[in-house]
Image (cartoon, rainbow, N blue to C red; front, side, top):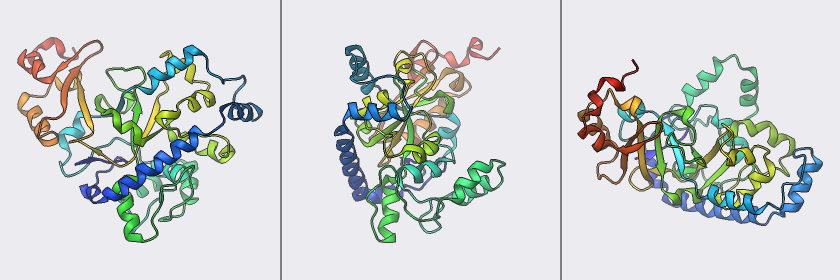
Length: 336
């Protein structure tokens, strides 16, 4: 079973895209090397000339370098909801990504939008969603994206020529899953606005991910403006490029900003292999009987490979301990 992007739930045909996943990972490694070869001083100078930064951000100070080392070791998390864990079918993935992602994905990665032949389940529902919106800007952006055609983004995904292989490529994980880099190491994850349940991923998943400061959807206009010099998408080995290009990074590293680092994860996320732990807020689990939780755990984690925990503002402990103490029945956990 796989977590899939877009807020829809996609059958686990992704498993047949093993070769596509390998291609994606290789391509991402090449992209990482490309970023590593960027001359940082020249990059800083060009950004200054464009008025994107107002002072030199490179070379980094020794303190900033230490901060970035810590930053690069931060856990990767996906925020979702207990409701989705409880209700969704085991054969389908789980994600809380917003429906506007296709626009950013086309601009950033060249991934086709609204393809009738390559579409995932739910595309028609998303089209109707946008059709009924009053947001003229979103509608105009949708009109500018050719349906079903792979485009040229900031970096592209080694797209196969045949339509059959293109479909396998998509199911192999070309369409990213969205998470966040939890640089504050918060128990509530890196993007708590998207849900209180925190899925913490294994560290190696970061190696097949890209990152931006904030919402990738917000980069669409910036890409059109100066895409030849701005590298909004970086890898875990090149986070200093984010530091140079974004004025918010200094305050973020000091946990003074509410901005998050969005992660785009390629190649899928497996509940059996890629998830380290799942944390459920006490406020969500307090009304859930142990029998109901047991069903959720057996559905998503039948082999008990994942550490399941509950948390509040200051503490985190195992779900088993929570139920053993009978805390779920105590009235002082209620909203009253």
